[in-house]
Image (cartoon, rainbow, N blue to C red; front, side):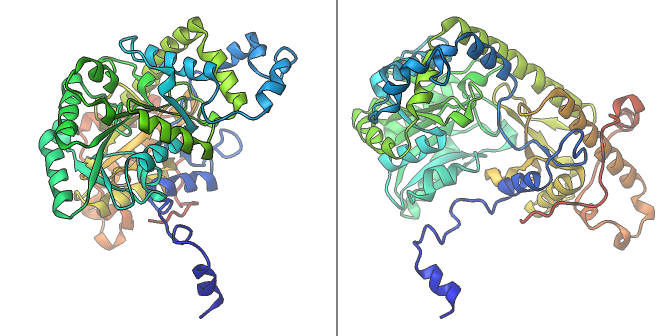
Length: 491
């Protein structure tokens, strides 16, 4: 037995596993960016990060609030008097002011249509910690949650890596804009039953990551009816609740729960966070809100392994208790998200690239099916490698979201400034223009002479579209198009 093998045997199964999911194209894109990050002056030919769902558009509002409220931080002369109280031990219940502020904020971003009990608010170290905690509370190793696909790639890590819980995709198709149907839900449930897999719950993401869409009330009612009939849990990840920037409005599962008398509330659990709604992922504020008191009790005890620091709780309580600021922030953030979403989607539309109609989130679902020679995973991955290595944009392929149809990509738009967006659009325009040119001359180029990636791509744009993308005024002077990749990704 070699040293390496013997050393591996000394470790646990989880240490030797790849359950974290870092070997997927979703994370490979991040690695490509980390190896060659774009900078407007230091590295203008680097990879632009469009794979990170981060809300950086309204930081200035929070910064200005902090400047006006120095007492909110114990690291200032005005707030240092609270240092000793916050530095001493706090149990896993959390500060009462924090739980009250969170409950109030959750009600506000849901239009004041529902109220939340602070005693049912459980804190956790980010949405990732909240997801794992609720998974531990509801299911055992080998059990499963049903999840509408496409879904967030890290769900497998968050809900299953350490718990042993499986995720079973529910097939959703572009023909009906990827809406979940009871027929598809029932089919996934029956398939699990036939495989002797115990289904413990249904997991939904509303608003959806990666689709950027919201579920309507009728759909939510049908899902509640389904889980009641099957006597399984419903986990509603609502961490993007405050990112809705156009109609229709967001409808929380809590609104349906309060209206539905026959609903078994013990089966309903909501996940929330400040990472997306307020743009504060580094604060690691994750929230579990369960209607089940036993789940609240268990989750609160388990939160000991990932508490939110009292300093952070103190600051968050101060920030969210300022009703005037919160109202202004939510209104302005919505406007800025809408403007940026429109800026990118319209820019892509000008060169013939469409996307799923969306109204929420920090991303949209880009449709590049027209660039595939055939609707296969292999063709999608070939296109993705070109976008990463040559166009130098980190967009995430649909297959990493368990999408059943090749050619869809998630594009994040709120983690960069306007100038970087224009550079990204310029690169896309140049890329499409080159493909139109290559496509028009392909008849005279022997197949063996073509770049290998061209064999899996095709472009079918109108002459009018070609005229648009070739117009000089549409091209950015800061749109480098490297001809040899500097980044190698693993697939």
